[in-house]
Image (cartoon, rainbow, N blue to C red; front, side, top):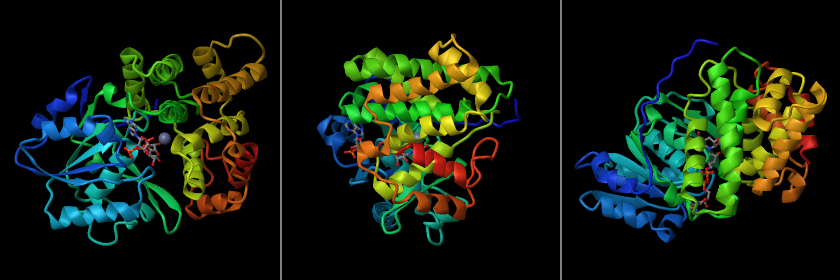
Length: 384
Ligand code: NZQ
Ligand code: ZN
């Protein structure tokens, strides 16, 4: 096991009815900017619950943060924060609203061009404090300090993070997710699954507890993901999926182990160029990346086959292949196709994707730094 420092200061309030606790969690007397997306919270009752809990607070609203939140929209919120001297941000929505609010929090205090937080990874030295009410289990954004922001004019999608960007608190009420359409339920399960895979399907590192954390999350998603799709109001299955998504990316399972975020990096480019949902890109890339990297990931893939999929018969090559086939089948059974052609996307941007990864000095990627330009091309070609 490698050395690590684990610090996660997020106060997490989990369960039905927890939105009422907002009145205690938001600092008394603070001027609040409530951020949200395209309106789902107004349809499912979350907006009303939040406003009721904050009846004694001065609240300004900023709606319209889009999926894959854009710099252009978020900078308008930054102006509001500065002009109105907002003291606390409250993000209400899915990963995009939460990520967007992290950017607003950092950008409002940043001197210089806030886009450089993403392009040049300029350090965040100050941030407006914020809390979240999560309505879509997927990203783990409610309990981590990372964010991904897109820029429309340049068709870029970039990530950044800072220890100053952890939420002060997050309210996670599984009932707020009942209104999710099947596509977003599927996206959430796939995103959480791939977060775990990218911290687990690497090289063996004598970290048995982290391995078993990862395997338990994967098995739970395989069990409860389909139940949630079939019966959206099954509270037990839903809360299980929601907690899996949080645990998949709050830093715990990645402590002291090698990680490989190549699927995410390639996936972000597919969203940037084609506007695919984040998890749709992951379902397309992961199975092919595992195949291309099957020698590098050989031992962990065999462990995954046995412990996650109960594949015990056959030689190494057969069990390994079966594990990848089962992974692809799981994504498809949740409703996420695994080929670019399923979304009418062709190969027109493949070379630009490789060139971008190269120009950002991200290649070679992977836990052994052996996923080079040629292999990225191979992964993309298989994904067609
Ligand atoms: O905008 P509204 O109207 O709220 O609708 C949203 C949106 O259309 C809707 N939705 C959310 N909660 C709902 C709901 N609809 C009905 N009922 C509800 N309860 O769902 C749609 C998608 O929402 P979005 O927030 O975009 O989805 P998700 O949570 O999957 O977030 C994706 C974003 O997070 C980034 C992705 O790249 C992408 O930009 N990620 C963030 C990470 C992080 N912070 O650590 C890690 C991830 O790997 C990921 O990259
Ligand atoms: Zn993700």
